[in-house]
Each structure stands twice: as structure tokens, then as C-alpha cells.
Image 1 (tube, chains in turn green, red):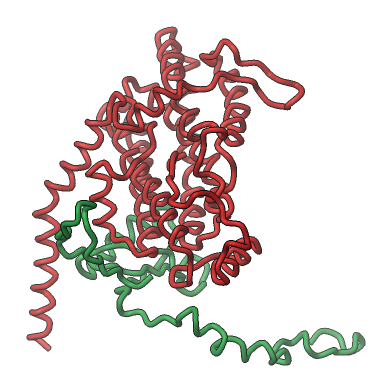
Image 2 (cartoon, rainbow over the protein chains, first blue to last red):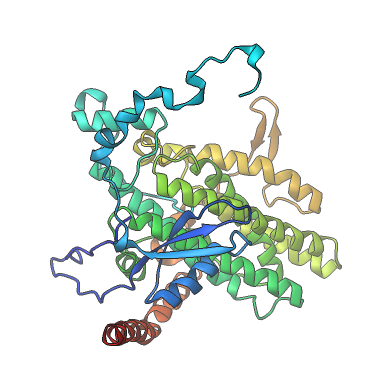
Length: 112
Length: 330
């Protein structure tokens, strides 16, 4: 999801294609009506924050999907890499006692 | 469908023995219905194929605005006009979701636009037919969006995460499109004789082009096997076409319209209709650039892009100026 650097590709004949810089990429987060936290809904291109906000409204909230918008420049997001999956998330696998279902509570104790 | 012919580079599906360990692990994940996400390892063919398919789909949404926008200023009532505007705006939105999904695969937006403008990238053949009357707008919503839904619903389960998520959003919005089309057809088909004739005429002209939307017959669909193994295509072209015919025939009957196919008949044994296939020569001609409106459609896109250049430049210049001003103030 990081911004794409247009590689110096060719037009098929071998001559490099010159391209102007694109409008920067932004990631859009929307908070819905029901008190949930902001959720990533997609991305869009915009020259500045104001345009990102306006475009986010038009692209991602045409049907009342949200009551609040966050727009973040894509290149400002720090993301974990797929290859870090094991060191990052594996340790949690062995700690099943973090889940309440790990503990058996006798029925006569009732709801806990 | 919106991506009718997506060419693959390979020479068919690799067997497990021929796969590298990475490819084999990748295929295993797909078979286990896991989603592939942007930065994860994927075979180059998967990436390329997806870029072609998603960008074709995105281009179709974008070009698909043109036949309908033709009627925004001519809609019969203010309400119809507002509805059509909302629908055309949705199509722009669908294009944007899809372009974003394709960009996560390492192609830039402008590169995709260039491919569209140069004719290198395709878009659905259906949008190269003209919308001559108001009833055509009904037929487009009912048939074209109906056919699109048929293809897009299964694609919500496609293997590439960003594509699947874009399809979920699109499908949510698409059924409004089909219903508004059917609503127009109902009005026309229950109207005056002239309106009924107009509805039938629109149906006659859009029936076969709608059937073409699903792409060539399975026996001629050389690129399908690999795409299906990768789960970027879920059903075959003929399966979806059959489903579309079976769904649409009773709807046409309800409207009192006649399907323009003398050979259309219910086949009890297969539990579906037998029907005449579209003229595939016409399909390839339209896809190859020789449909009734190809030049006009492409020209409209190119003109919009070229004439918007000064504005895009201005936006960037303004943003840069504000940025520098901000630094000075700080």
C-alpha cells in the first residue's frame, strides 16, 4: 500500500516514458455511525489535505458510511512486513491463557 | 466480463511438480482460500495477470460513465436526472476503488491511464455501443449492470485481498444500478405504444452485446485455466452467461418484452434455457477497436485527460507553494 514509484519502464519500443509526478497517494479511514473506531476503507490521490478530504467524502461516504474521516499520506504509514509475521505474531500463539476460555469455572459459580 | 479477455503469459497451468517451492507454497495458500496481500511474495505471472484484469475492470467503470452521461441532460424528469447522476458518480467511484487495488501491485495510476489512452489496455466491449434513447439507459442498468453483478458477486471471494475488498464495496452499490434500470424499463414497458416500442428496441439492441460481456465461449477461452487456478476468476464464461440468461428471461416476460432470439427455449433436462450465442465476429471486432463508438469513447477519455493537465499541474504547484509557505511560517 506504500506509494508506488513509477519505474522507468518503456513504451515497448525501448524508449523510456517520461511521466510527470503523480498527485500523492493518501490512505482513507472512516468512522461509522455506531461508535466504532476509524477503519481503513481505501486510498485515493490528492494534491493536498483539503483535496484529500473532499475526495474522500465523494469516494468513500456517498451512502452515509461515516461521521468522521482521517486522511493520511501513504508514505507516512509505517507497516510491518510480511516476512516479520513470525517473530511478531508467533509468540502470542503460546499464550492461550490470555483468553478467558482457558479457565474452567464451575457451573455453580455462575456467570463470570 | 468487465475484463473480458485477460491474456496470460504462461503456457497453461503449471503442475505441482513443475513449481518452485515458493510457487507451490503460494498455490497452497490459494487452495486454502487464504487472501494474498500486497507486499507478500507472488508469482510474477499472478501479478501481471491481476494488473491486466483489475485495470481492464477499472477502465470499464470509467469508460462506462460515457454512454450514460449522454442522457444526464436529457433525462425525462428531475428525479431521473438526479438518480442517473448518482449512478454515474458511483461508476467513477468503482473505477477509483479498482485503480487503487491495481496500484498495490506496483503499477502507477498514470501508467494505467496511458495504457488505456494508447489502446494497449482494453475495456468492456459493451460500452462501445451507443445509447440512442432513454430506454437504452433502462436497458443498460437492467442488463449491463445485471451482467456485471453476476460476475462481480463471486469475485468478492477472489484471492487477492485488495481486489476482493474493492469488489465487496462495488457489489453493495451495484444492485441500486440494476434496480434503477429495471424501474425505467417497467415505466416504459407499461407506457404508451411508442414507449413500449422504445423499450423493445432497446432490449433488442442490448441483448446480444450483454451476452458478449461474459467473454468468449469456454471452448475458445484460452486464458481461463490459470486464472481459475489462481482464483482470480471464479466461474467460467459460459456458466455465468447461462445464469444471466436464466435470470433475465423471466424478467423480460414480466415486462412483456420479447427476447430477440427465436431459438430461446427452456431445456428441462439441463434446467436452463437453450439460446443463440452472440455473434463472436462482432465481439472481436468491437474489442479490437471497430465497434460503433470505440473512437468516440477513447477520444472522450483522452481529451478529458489532456485538457485536465493544466489543472493537475496547478494543483501540485499550489500544494508545493502551501508546503513552502508552511515551512517559512514554522
